[in-house]
Image 1 (tube, rainbow, N blue to C red):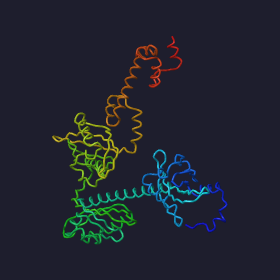
Image 2: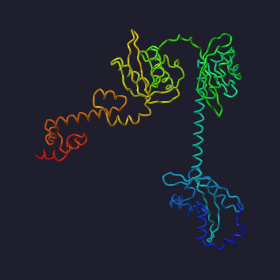
Image 3: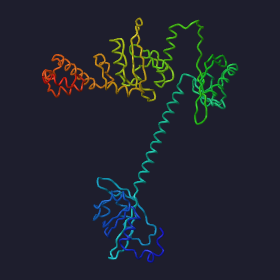
Image 4: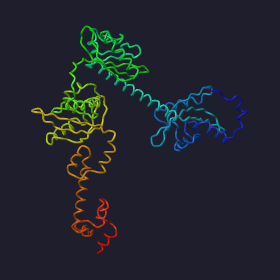
Length: 483
């Protein structure tokens, strides 16, 4: 702190009003205290803070107008205020109490000065810290969000590592520039060599295949690098270990391109057919269909599933779903599959059953399921068609709410898609409308007689006619009723 050099010459002639105005402007809050620490006057140069400071503080000890943890700080400020040799006044952060239990954070210091009356008074000067507190809160929230994202990425990396290690398929991660093997899972180590994964890391790919196969793989790598499209070929392993299918795709990570190489045992090629059979075409259609197709036994255990279902379930191979119950991925565990199987046993088919499908990594998708029971000797099976309806569900539900069906069959199909109270309400409206139509027909459109028949007042009947859009409420009907 640097005091004025000649205060008597420069500010000694200031009046009390001028001095008070200067103190008001110089600080966000100025409190005048007597020698007992009681608040005698206060002023604020901050308009927003002026609305928050209250006259209830006047006449009360300053220590009683702050929070409990701030009271020792007030005592220290009052004790240090009278030290005339202290040229470096200490500023302390404390919280003033406001009506309603709110707190006002302030950075304050105190100075003792003698007035014309001869009695010493203290002045407490405060700076509003709410803007600083808001910035600190935003910083804390940002740090919390960063930490949450960090742990989410850590969990995702853990899942990836686990899947990479336990996958039955041999997988290699290769640098697209140097073609050095960066990572290899245990399945790749077993297929390409006798050592562990460390024996493969650092080798140039293709490794573990004969020279002829390497000559075929190198152009394949160049083509994938140039076009970015996945491709595959066949290769022979060294030491007559067998033939494999090499599938190569590319991805980018931290501005670097990498190859993802998958090695699977090659199956013997089937003899060429002159023309594809109907069953083979249907099988190819099922495998490449954009909707999920799943075949299960009567207990719901998966026998086969197409690639669309595997992708929607966030899996990689059909082996991961085979033998599992379809209930594992459906939204309401233990309910949805049981309801569908029960209906399939009774009716043989289920249409547009609304539910959700959960992926292995937490993704939830709104779906519609249609299913059928297929006789197959002593072992019938169930076929499920699962369609992703997430993009159109909001509009569809709104239409379903506004235009509920009128037939009993359609009403029962809404179970699980529309709340029970909405179905009951639609049924009640349907019965009420039919009764009004019957009464109008029996009375030949005489509103008064129809209202008496239904036990309603004429005004109530008119309200219901307008609600359901029945009859002509114009002049002709009015004249008929007048007669």
